[in-house]
Image (tube, rainbow, N blue to C red):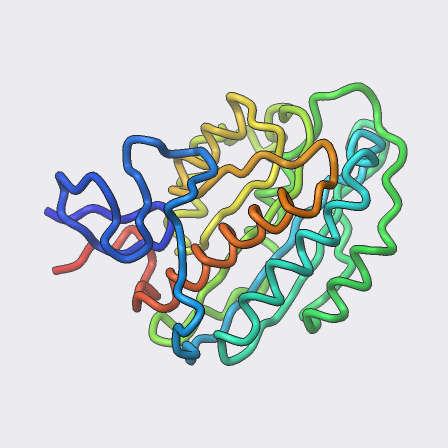
Length: 249
């Protein structure tokens, strides 16, 4: 019985130590991995990418205000030339106890619109952490008009988060929300301060956690962007466009 790579969803042998498509190290999951690479000469993949960016806009994210738009711009500058088209949504969220509910900013727009909208986000307000990240991720999954043809589309949630998460108001656990993401065939990438709850969410979704940089150092941002774009492109390039719950026959 094959297993799915959490980076690119390629089907590999059950006892494989590394993914044969993207190089993911199965013994070192939920960490930034240097082995995920993509050749610069990779052919353009005729796949439509639907991307929901989820952004914590509380004051605790203000320390990353410069790095977040740079990272997003780097990610999509590397992905955009390799896919047929990208449809973008941007959702912000804050402290729901303070009235900061999930808000849709970019609604099915272009990459350039997404980047400009991210640059205009104000990071302010909110109470003490933890935040309402689980609510925001579940809201993003449930409200995005995904149109995922298994032969031509790929959906992805990229979330920029700080601190840990409060329990979801739906009553769903981090594991249950992650399983919903996996069952929907959506890729999940968390650029965050790793926490037990967020790690549990990513692991259940077979997603990847990247540590958000506390200092917007250009080289570190380039590294994160390269890893994210490589794993997304490896996913669409490997032909793994069926939901990850469906194993190869």
